[in-house]
Image 1 (cartoon, one colour):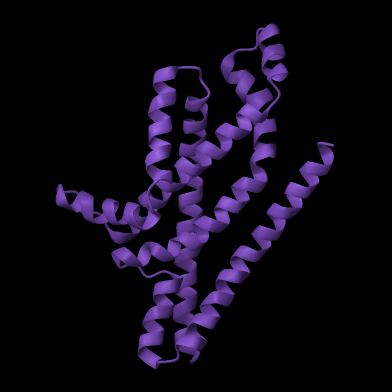
Image 2: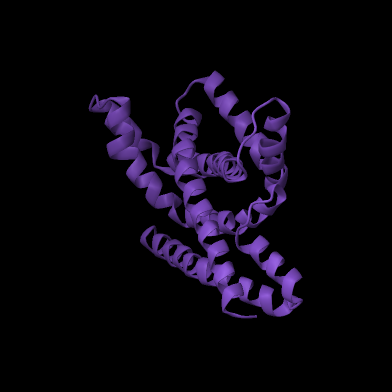
Length: 213
């Protein structure tokens, strides 16, 4: 395996990182909206968002990417592979992050909400200044854990022909016939991305557990 092949892997790595960042950021925005709707007290909105979460948590990410890319094309909406994967990862991430953050919001002691209401603090200010800062702190370990899963999930982008790290490794392996070497390097690159995040999540979880005692 030479220099050109390694550079090709790094290009695939770049797209893996870009997909992960886009999916996580856009999914975070959607997830926050879902979490707020899930805790707003409206039975209708709570049922709708619960159904949305159920669909995306109850089906494989591979199928979701397949439906976004090929399914929308059947109704005349042909998307570029990059756009389709970004949309699929965003929808997937918003469902999982929405449920993570919904649990974190509900984990904030109810007395905090009652005290804010007693002080006549409006809903937006109550969530922004009182509830969400505490909920975000509670959710950090689980959120980081999901980010690790999202990074690894980008490997499924190959289903629509998008060349990220795993597909780049497969292309090179088929060219030079050294699968153990190529995918060993691919595995190391994934490890370099995911291991620090895993360690960070574990440390935050231990720290929060100690502070809660």
